[in-house]
Length: 263
Picture (cartoon, rainbow, N blue to C red):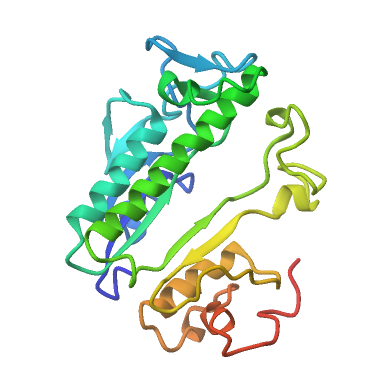
């Protein structure tokens, strides 16, 4: 994307190496704010934080540290709020040029932690883990809304391809009532649908009709070629990608399955 003239930003969980050659700034990103791996969401010393039973002390704040570029920065805000705020700021800074933003929220994920702002929205949950888990999802929902609102505010909503996806189903430890992956069986770390079938939504108002459900199997591997095609790359074969450009399938120009099999 950078070679195509896009401003590029990576915000959130990276987990592909921070040493030279693997750091986001060495992998095509102009800007990075995030963590090298998994992370806690709060500092337990902060006032008005809520940590689910069994998770206190399970995750140190910002895992291996919070970084802006290559420099560590203080961990002083609820992690989801910090990442969302940085994502909105990136859009504001680059609203007048093509941009590619990879915004990797860590939530909902263990350790199950939140702040009082989100916790107080869910008094109906008597189970503490469920209440905090719902609060974590609500925080992500707020910031996804803020990202979309920032696009709308700057007249970019119609021409921006937005993809929202998860990386796996919920873990067994977070599924305290067995409802998170329902009606699918299984959880993260297995190959049942509860482990590998995830939310996957796309919006591009200039190109894609809203309110449609595409029934054929697709993969997160398809994000890369779809984004390249959206940016104007005509020949994707040069990249030798495992993914498939989904645009012609979503626009109804191709009617077969995007691939013969997934394995």
